[in-house]
Length: 339
Image (cartoon, one colour):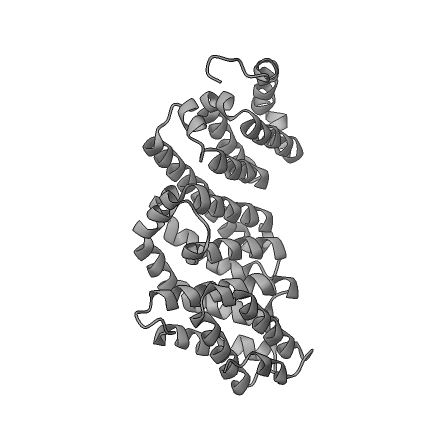
């Protein structure tokens, strides 16, 4: 309670000079293993004693960002994820000398900065060569969506960030953790109405819903092709559930926005385009136009029923993938035909 000294105050007082020495030592800053462990200690302190860390936060985050720029050590981004989540608490916001408005401004600036650095790094090396950084970055973006959506939606780099997530679905060349991290972010961002968020966060996202809709309109066809292409043989089977969830999130979102509650012409054209895409047909000779049409019909029927039909939609896409691989026959789809 107020006025009491935290039990870990003495511990923090003792270790703080050591942490500062390590963070300023050039040999330590060049050693990724030492840095990772240092970031981990800072994350644990943030989690254990957030109100004691609050006054030091701006110094810590400056160090984290500088170290990230020097090394592109993915664990620096893990600290940012932890910070975004911790600052959902009013206590630490106050301890850091911030209010909600200045917190939002600080975290918008932070996201903008680390995205610019990450994007330049990924462009230089190529996504498939920096999958750990991509995984960690999209985990940061997902934490922003859940805990600080205002900072995410106000970020000037949001359109570019969304575009990078779309590209990573294929450019990470099936590397599991990075592709899944991008998929989880895109799925939850597109399907924000379906994730359980406090009313204050829902209000923020509703205020920016036209921004989200415009991003989906620009990239929806590419994401749809990546999801269906991935399940038809372009991605490892372990990613099929995540690809299915992303595809279904797009369908649900568009149907929920449609005045008639029906799949509209845009969605149907994306699905048809994906099913007749050359890369899909190259992945598998087993996907005929009839199977493509039948799968689209079943998915649209399920999407009309809303979120409750997501498990069945995922099963449809798993069977679609198995048909593409020749592991099951097209008759498997008949079980899903809705009367």
